[in-house]
Image 1 (cartoon, one colour):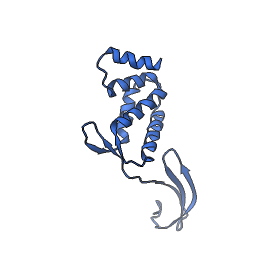
Image 2: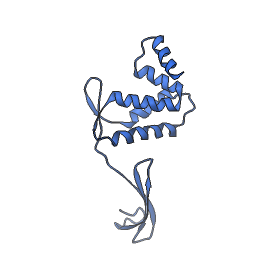
Image 3: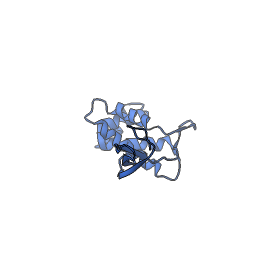
Image 4: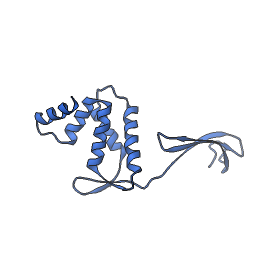
Length: 148
């Protein structure tokens, strides 16, 4: 690992810790030349997850799409960005820990709906109405009755 201060190529690891929220390892390093200390993070690289869309097309999993959808559903609701990111981290961790690296988009959508149900009922109904393409007020009513 190259030192940020002097550019020397060698350093020693002073301390290592797991960072479970991000699936990374935090390492404190010390340059063997100038003794400057700095922190690096090592993240586990996973085989990409492919999402099978409704039309059969396949695309690589993109956590930003889930975050954006959840942010829209949670707009003007008392839910922090950290809570949303934590929920997305949990979804991503569950997806990466499965053996199957091709996941149906509907399964991901249902996982998002479950996380939103736990976070905020209004955000849950908002997301469900778009995701499940509610056609009329009766479908809203059925979903709200499930919550009650």
